[in-house]
Image 1 (cartoon, rainbow, N blue to C red):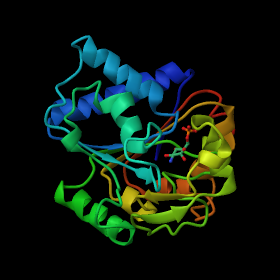
Image 2 (cartoon, rainbow, N blue to C red):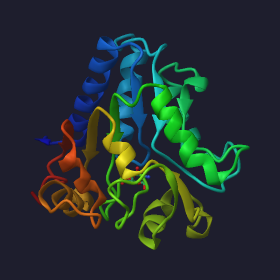
Image 3 (cartoon, rainbow, N blue to C red):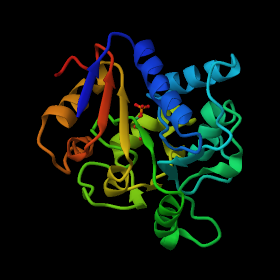
Amino acid sequence: MEVVPLTTAGEVAALAADVVEALVRRRPAAVLGLATGSSPLPAYQELTRRHRAGAGPSYDEVTCLNLDEYVGLPPGHEQSYRATIARELTDGLGIDPARVHGPDPGEDGLATAGERYEELILKVGGVDVQLLGIGSDGHLAFNEPGSSLASRTRMKTLTARTRADNARFFGSLDEVPRHVLTQGLGTILRARHLLLVATGAGKAAAVAAAVEGPVSASCPGSVLQLHPHATVLLDEAAASGL
Ligand code: GLP
């Protein structure tokens, strides 16, 4: 694992944007794995800013695969991860919405949603770079502590802590969905490059456990230690527990 301690959140965003742009220049039909949450947002803003300034590569041939999605929100809900990714990144990069995919119960239902998404990931040739944040309890995507290290895309129930963490995006805690579809840890590990970004003191303990602790389902982020090409970009506060 390559751990890159930087000073500011702005530096983390700029370096993450550099990694994505370098990949798309090298491979115009790259498959980008996208995460939601506030951690990758500055990187998404930086990518969008560069693209609008005419400085970035063309994203016309890129395919995007979202990590996870809430279950039960009405279609088009502004806090759905599909809507969030479109608003925060892919619309700004001019990526055709038909090239942006996420786990989705769709008409075929929840029971097969995970399997169908796994098939799609394989069909597009797998993820080239997977952006990741980390939850304050060490979760990756919506793989809460205790998730199998070999898990595949499936439905999960959110912990009270994650629902409370994410309540800031909703009107109240009651509105935060209880269930989600999420790529599994085994799914995430199949991406060719994992790029985790973490900023702020609130992530210091989770980062230390993921990077320096034992590989364990108690800290889903620790699976990065099993990956041959994992990069962790940290600001000073997020690195303070190392
Ligand atoms: C959510 C997302 C994760 C994200 C985590 C941390 O639970 N499903 O992918 O890493 O939140 O979010 P934030 O970056 O806002 O702290």
